[in-house]
Length: 90
Image 1: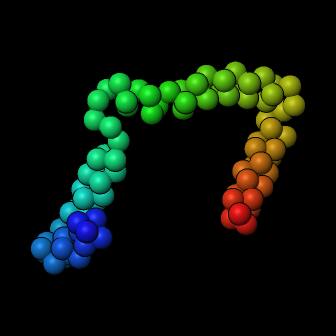
Image 2: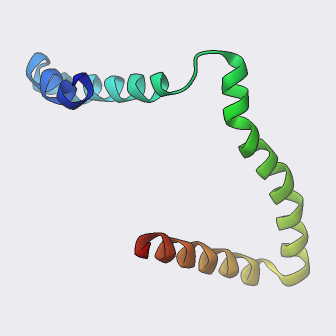
Image 3: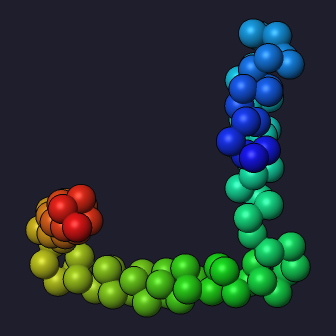
């Protein structure tokens, strides 16, 4: 109930020149509250991202050196476009 009404409450409580700041702080607090509060869980949440960077960094460098930067970046853009279309149609 609080999340659904927080925008209306903040818009009413703050003057127009401070409304953006209040809404921004409210959204950051809502996002931060959705994560676990211990360092262990923060590490567990970020572990897949770190592993992905460790694998993708050298692999993308090797592919870029082998096939050229233009072909590699075009392939990446086509892959992102195809995945976006696939997600939109699902």
